[in-house]
Image 1 (tube, one colour):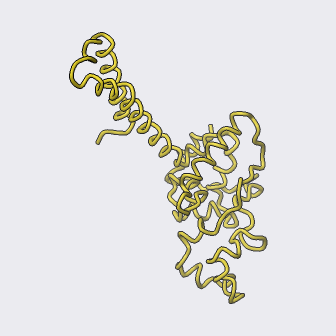
Image 2 (tube, rainbow, N blue to C red; image 1 turned 45 degrees about the horizontal axis):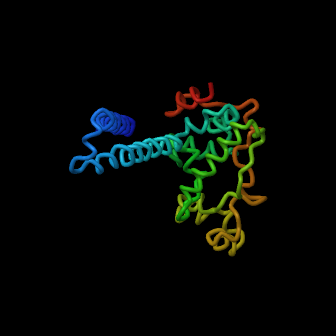
Image 3 (cartoon, rainbow, N blue to C red; image 1 turned 90 degrees about the vertical axis):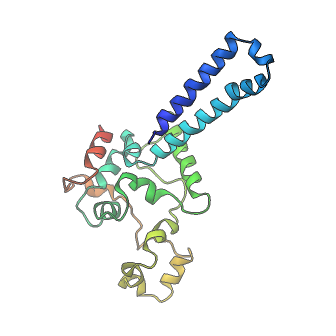
Length: 218
């Protein structure tokens, strides 16, 4: 199957060939369908190639390795592999509760109607801030972590519905499901990556995506 990069390159080459033909044979423009060739060569092909390339890069931005390619994210990458069960990202990552190749994207994308678009725009904002040299640890989210990101996987699961901590108050589960009580509120899961736990972490080797993470952190 032809990859997106190859398809984009093919569209670009065909567009260049068509534009070159029109430049060296301007008389073709006056012929029947000439204006249509101009439209295709100067508008349709460039837009099509740009759309394919943008789609490919957006898809690549979902990869865990892409997120961890920034030096500032190195500790967050290491936190995925720590053996400390208090570290929620590691607990999810190491037990395959999130896809390892899209671990960051899976948890930090709001799954509302425009959640994926919003995630991509926030990613661009982070990249722009990094380009300007503004970000410094600790990194903070631009907006509060919404329960939707947790409930898309945990809703209906026995560990969630029957967890002792969730049943200590009969109103707790309904409030969490309605978004009235945050899963990341104080006293619950108020700390995500627990970076302080990885100063001298127990790192378990041999994870499926470890090579990708290690390479991204170099």
